[in-house]
Image 1 (cartoon, rainbow, N blue to C red):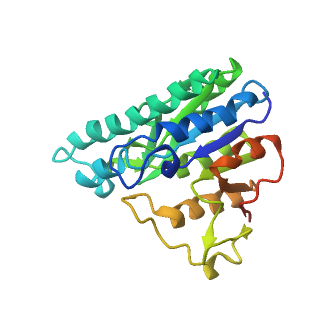
Image 2 (cartoon, helix red, strand yellow):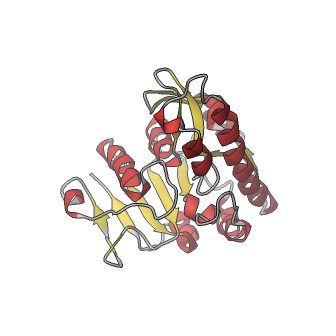
Image 3 (tube, rainbow, N blue to C red):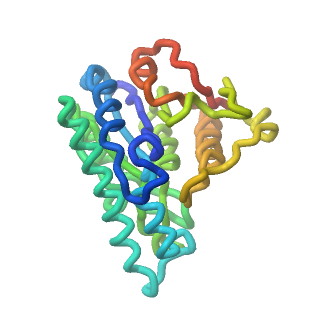
Length: 251
């Protein structure tokens, strides 16, 4: 199998993050139209964030604090919210002509103390062999220490990149890259990350905002795999290998 390409669609571009539970269908359609011409040219995995679908529910039930019988009802509520978003994303991808298929982390992933220990890698390999496009997302998953936890798309992407040998990893966001004082930072690495003010998310985000994203991507960089953060309207340029600006995250 050729090396897969992994694209993460940020929660801020598939939902309206300032409005709880609102899917941004127009932006999803534009993303699908950018990606569609590349379907079948190489193995492709798409992961999307939860945005305003799932974060409020997880916070309301205190899923990040661990799950017991007292708050286990939050598993269904949170998973239902993110699954609804995933259906919208997959529907748009399929309408654009892609063989996209949902792969819910709740059913194929397992965590230990908040970190992935399995993520459906065998299933994904079989899907890719049939030229299907797995579409995963941030989700609630069972956890051997906490009962259940939230696994963000930002954690899923590096895990799969390492396990599947991906060399091209792209993160599409609602801005042109990682910003500091309004300017795109061209590169983030272990040497300069401590000097950068990564700030946080202005909306409900229980997965760490931009700081959490960069922390995960630096772990990926430690494994020898670079990643790229860029504006959502540059997805096609990324897939073409053209100059797409943004921020390079490397070791």
